[in-house]
Length: 336
Ligand code: FNR
Image 1 (cartoon, rainbow, N blue to C red):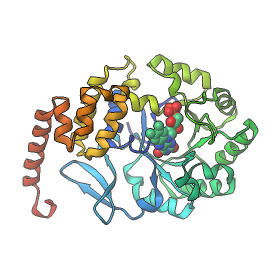
Image 2: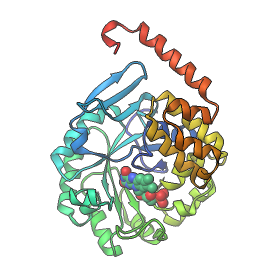
Image 3: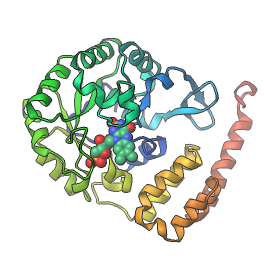
Image 4: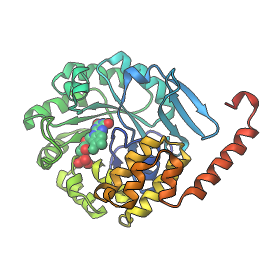
């Protein structure tokens, strides 16, 4: 695939803090997701990062001055990855987008996060009631970035208010709009307002990406049902993909044990950190955390101990050995 990313008729991995790191995104793509979003990354943080090519992992890393890797990506996802940022400032948003634009397929702005941290900073759902700021941020990005720009909103208390916001967004030149069918006050247990998404989809001039249906999605057929209920162009899945990323398989979901093994192998490949790997596996295990694998996962202090739980130590060793050989073969200036 090459060319500009298109958002029509896609099944998409939603942005999820801590979940949407590189191994999960690669896994979702391998299972059949068309597009994957990274977790929301805050512009303030990203602009401090340096872009570093990592020849050992074959990744591109965005690293803070203290050495912490904030965002890691690789060739496999380059043409299908959307970078989501949290921002309240057009120029900082642009600076952030320019830093990553060569390594991603699209840029998205989070306009739905209801968490205090976002609202206090004027980000996320705080933008829903500031159409002028929305216009400024999106126009600046659309004009300044070579990749398609989108945003992800929540619905407002009435259809009319939501339509008004959507019409402002449409005028900025965005390539699509993600809509989570709940208001910022509604929790994930509130049923998704498919009717509102449907009304917006019927009127919108750009593809609408419906989101909020995880409670009704357990199989690939449910994904199609979700799409037809919302009459939308594309669908975006968050929690159901977090619980079992093989939801993206047209052939049907795989048993969790198999999915977790696939995930842990990718976490090893990406040199994903232990705490993030544990967190993602724990979300997949859910109630089974009470069982022996869950207890062993909780106790695991490093990747080797996680691999022990799923019989993947030989895999880890083979990857580490290959990595060591590669490191030795690199020119001295590239060796750490
Ligand atoms: C989220 N959500 C979210 N949204 C967003 O725009 N950026 C983000 O970084 C996050 N982070 C995040 C983390 C976790 C663990 C969850 C469960 C959710 C919201 C998410 O993308 C989605 O809008 C909602 O979960 C509703 O969709 P589902 O879960 O019904 O498919």
